[in-house]
Image 1 (cartoon, rainbow, N blue to C red):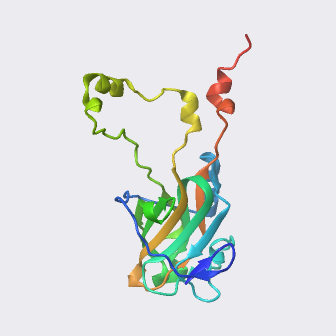
Image 2 (cartoon, one colour; image 1 turned 120 degrees about the horizontal axis):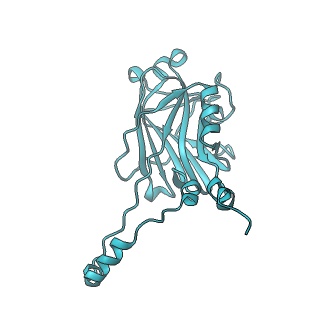
Image 3 (cartoon, rainbow, N blue to C red; image 1 turned 90 degrees about the vertical axis):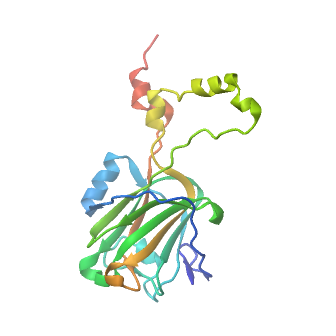
Length: 235
């Protein structure tokens, strides 16, 4: 079953598929106050306007338990691993991190241990962007996205291998502009995020997740950045 976080509808669960190798990620485990301080320090906000769904759920412990803001409620899967949480945005979003609230003291063998995060725009281009293993977590497990560096593609036409073409490529250096450095933040631009629970503590079958936040950077207008205003003067 698939449980829709917006409409409450049910449907067939989608298969998990990914492309590329996941980046090995060492997550931070932080408290509520520490997460709020980090969000403020790094200008992070919870990304909204999404449809949330899960691969399965026990009655009374559905997808809305991930979003109600309480650590006393939890989503509980109902099946064999892997268990999947899917978040679908209406528009492209710059996802910087995913935070899951886990509590091994309360949940014991229901606590996720190994997780994988995928991002993309549709089923055909989902790629692994992080994989983590956590032992005995109590708090928010902060998983940062690892965007792949874009490199110029190689051209197969003969003209592309000429001396002039090579010189043009070598001279095509990135812009060195402090304004753009502040405007462009780290993150993975996507419309779909999947959190895949691959293994639980003590080889548990089902999992408990007591909260999930998808975080993105606040986008600041280029004309209001610190670098721009510092260089602004009357002529």
